[in-house]
Image (cartoon, rainbow, N blue to C red; front, side, top):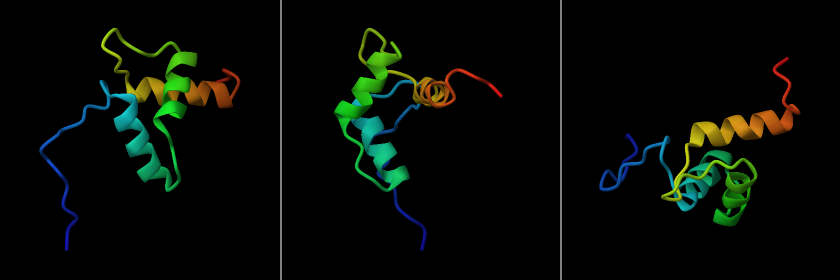
Length: 73
């Protein structure tokens, strides 16, 4: 049986809200990720656009840079 997905609302990883990102990350990680945690990272990385959305790709890149202290080794 294949999993069913709600297609009534499509998500764009290049333009996502903190609430949607928190839900996706929590599902992928298997742990609780709150909207507030996502917002803190978005603010720290200055990732938010005028409409409040951000790119999940930029979000992950920012976290990767933080973890590696900006080194690309």
